[in-house]
Length: 264
Image 1 (cartoon, helix red, strand yellow):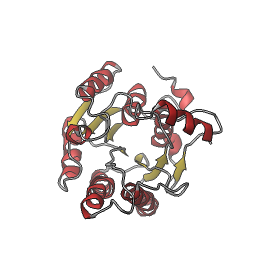
Image 2 (spheres, helix red, strand yellow):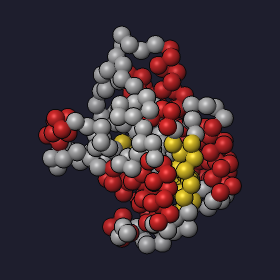
Image 3 (spheres, helix red, strand yellow):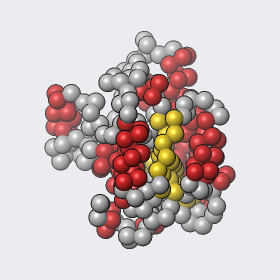
């Protein structure tokens, strides 16, 4: 169990809340780490995954990953449900919220972690590549936020946390479509925060920097570590602790921020 005092929150800061976390496919991923921290803090969780996409990316799908994660979260004491959902479809966000309400109750936390990625420089991008990134990273994220806000029951405990990739910190050559959409996430976060603050909802983005979710080669891991002031790469748990803090009562006065958690 995680020592909740180490998260910078009172032990009861998250207990009894309901969260949606998207993009939870791999046991070593950021999404899974977020779910574990939430479960240990007494949060019930609906998480989404999409194996068809996972099978296309480098490394392929962890085919039993979602089921194993769901089982682990339940072992940690949470009510947990995994949902296969293609967030590129316009109707998916509403269905995700409906599934959460039906199985767990009305959520007060939304973590937009799911992302679509493929490399590609200026000679590679085309309409299909741009549309594929936009459908998940921008439209899916924005519609999930809309569905969440429309269902939120009031009070000061609403939390939306979006995952960014630090487009304002450094360029991302050969990843133009991805960088474009993640830059849009940051812009959307700041403006949405101002719009929904009066409803008791905070909206922030977390840029976790280079995070070792088993996609790094040894040489790449060593190169990234050399650039970090702490001489290591990020771990999924680093991002999870920040997200848990923002989701807690202790994060109530923080909104409209892009938090760069890079250990540099």
